Amino acid sequence: MTAAVPPAPVAPPRPRRRPGTLRTRMTLVMLAVVGLAVIVTGVITVPVVRSSTVGVAQDRLAAQVDLIAGLDRVPAGLDGSQTESATGGTLFAVIDAPGTGAARGPGRTYATDVVRQALASTGTYSGTVRGAAGPALVEARRTSAGFDVVAALPMRDLDPALGQVTFRVLIALAVALAAAAIAAVLLARWLSRPLAATARAARRLAAGERGVDVPVAGPAETSEVALALRALDHALATSEGRQREFLLSISHELRTPLSAIRGYGEALADGVIDPAATADAGRVLVTETDRLDRFVADLLELARLEADDFSIERVDVAAADLVAQVDEAWAARAATVPAVLRTRVGADAGVLSADPNRMRQVLDGLVENALRAVPAGGEVVVVAAADPAGVRFEVSDTGPGLDAGDLDVAFDRGVLRSRYRDTRAVGTGLGLSIAARLVTRLGGTVSARARDGGGAVFTVLLPRG
Image 1 (cartoon, rainbow, N blue to C red):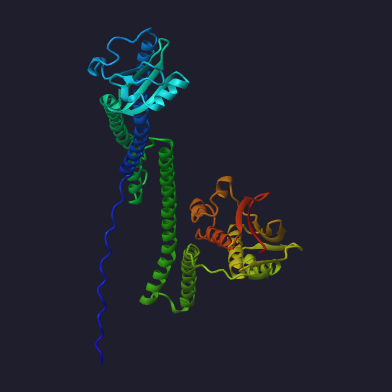
Image 2: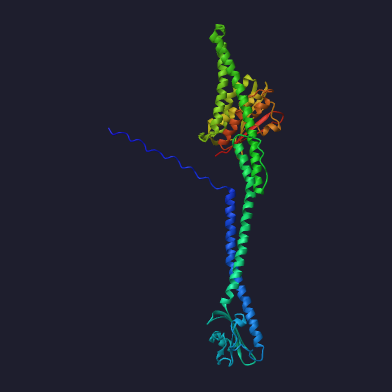
């Protein structure tokens, strides 16, 4: 035989990395946005400022040339003896014979054919020309004195000024970025502080604490979250309070039959019950056991209704057949109250697609509840009729009825029982809740209202399909 190969060990799952906090993410996002804005601003601003600086230099050069062009003779030193240092970096040239003469002066290499053609056609030139000193801003004018003057400002002389302007712009952008970073950190802290407090309150709620003080602060959206958490806290406290009352009520109801069963069981075990009374003791035990069975069945049914695998088997069923079955099943019980059980089926009630067993559960629960509430000589009426939304079933009684405050909580488990257990006959407190959940699973609606003349009416509305 081949030896069994042991299964390969399963590696433990890697711990999940904790995601960054909201404050960190907000700070990074705002810094990214600000950084992008600064970069875009720098890309746009630096060329504009440099261009503006060059434009100012061009305007100054044009003003110098215009001043010289207004003279009636060539200024002394402009034709060759002038040096670059003497003119602050501007190179001048003079063309004695406009259009054909040779240029003389330090800026003569900038008297190109393009400059000469512009002077010949328009008498002026403004632009950039490459000469012996490299690229330069050039301004040229034809004068009324019969000569042309050319002025050139090498770009290399502008580089220090352009570098200084660029540096100042970059410093300003860096300061703006630092200020924006500080503002982003402070803003992220301000925005996240209320959310952090709300998260702490939510964790306390998740741990089972109730009545948690949820701070309402910060932006409107954060305040809405805090208010919603407060409402959730109140709803949980209310629901859990009802559950505690329900469990206390159920435990009391379970204890009563258990006490009776134990008492009779001990009496039978000790032989203190007369043999002639054994049958009576057995009947008491059966009755109390039935009560326990009903409690357990209701609790199980409620648990099943709240599960996802609750089954519904739909078939075509006549409304009249359902009402007839209810009448047959409960007529004897109504006679023991004694009460009158009446049924009425509209001619147009017709057929609906539903689970007949679940529908019997609903109608049986409502009729049982009505017979428990109705006094001796009272009346319980079961009606089936057509409705624009489908088929309507009504169970009404002439019992003590429900007030306005009862109608909103009539189908909440255990609420009516806790209100009236000391004043009227009540059941486990689960019947109406089970009926409401069954109707919901069947795709219908259930409601309660006061009956004219006293009593209550429970209405079940189901679609035909």
